[in-house]
Length: 458
Image (cartoon, helix red, strand yellow):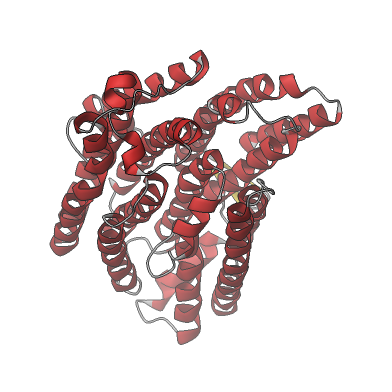
């Protein structure tokens, strides 16, 4: 609860600074406030408690994933000064809405009641509708926010209807009460409950961009301002997958026959379709959108496996994925502002003119692909081992095949940077941006070498 309170205060403070016209104070306050919130979050470690009759649950799972969300937001804000350096208008509204979106994501990782889950999703979603259309002068940004708003509102109806049906079956919104109802059914569930469960899965699958509810992601990612796309691809995905994970781990206690086939099929389709479609993308931003879709499928393995190692595996995966994706979007920002586009041919010879940037993007791509000894490889390894321990051999085979296919598009920017002729154009970045990029690259390498610092937490 201290996390939600501290982040809310930070968001209000940012808006207040905007009213006071203290534009230069915004980022220093945010980059100070986020670590403070992170410290307050970590102080709740091994101190489980609940608020408001169990509506908010503070446990090690919520603490760990909330820390990842705040840390990822901190990395994104370190890039904000460079990204918005040419913008004259005040930015307190954008920064404030980003922080309130973060509050919603933290609520999604800490809920103990389906009403609180819905409030968290709506807090996050409404903020994202605003952020997607924050570049009002660009037609693509207006198109992105309209698509996201229409589809998001429609799927929110599915989610709310599913919650209502679950309440109608169980007589409660509380996860503990729902868990007791599930146990009492003995594996024989009424159609009303099954319908509600299916609609709940659909609503969360939209937020995670799971096939067949993924069609919005490429267009919305492409039209949204790049820095905010990085926010959507990491914060939203982590919060949504953790919300799904928390629901099943709290309510089913290993009784997963009723929903396992549905998520199993969705995971395989997401992995294969996301990777196959990513091969045909002409630019880095759309390629990262389909990469994000495929990684949603990998994350579902932790939900399906349903073992004591699932939480640790998902924790490492979300952390490694978030850092690698933010690092890739950081390079994308540099390329788009210098070359005017992000087509792969615009990266030709980048390694000769900008060896540091090329190296950082290469590490990010290889990590997302799952090449040892980087963080992405260890994250996939733990996920696959967790799934194999539960007997999901064919699911792991499909995941490995998807990783192999992904090499066809993850190597495109690497080949362009190192094997094509250079046009000699230098990418300009400030010292803070460079430090952040190097830090993320080192994190990717260290997490691959020392994954046990994360995998033994939960």
